[in-house]
Amino acid sequence: MSSSPSESPSPDTAAVWSRTYPPEAFAFVSDGLGHTASLVHGASSEFVPVTDDGRHVDGRQLCEGLRDFAIRRFGLLAPAVLSHWNIHRTDDFGRMVFAMIADNKLKKNDDDRIEDFFGVYDFATAFSDRAIIDALKAIRDEDREG
View 1: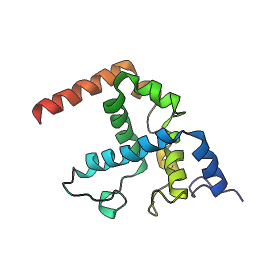
View 2 (view 1 turned 45 degrees about the vertical axis):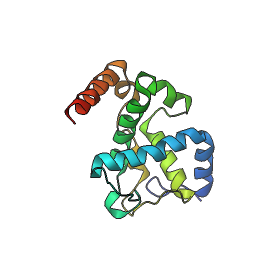
View 3 (view 1 turned 90 degrees about the vertical axis):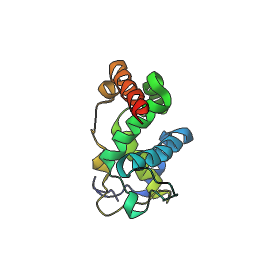
View 4 (view 1 turned 120 degrees about the vertical axis):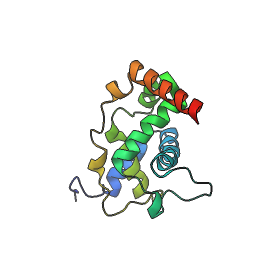
């Protein structure tokens, strides 16, 4: 049975996606989810699981947060690291998230759809040297102000 694009992927599809990306990529997305929740909802002094209703992020927010997280963590090497992990488009983030949902490692709400991850930004543009340098400068300026 095939699923329509807005439904969760079948267990077989999710299993294929799980094998497409290395464990390090899934760890990156998991860590990046926490980073994104802090960006969207503010840092919390106490541990609040990102799966709680008050810390939910949507696909677009997660893609943007993962871009920021990759640049902060890897700098100019971000596109090379992501490519090494078979991550070439925001769609890949969605496939990983929905594989994690199928594996009961993440939860989704009724509004979450895999299409929310499709085409959020173009990797070549978002991870160009100029875009990364500009983002790193903005991060440095934030750190100086904060």
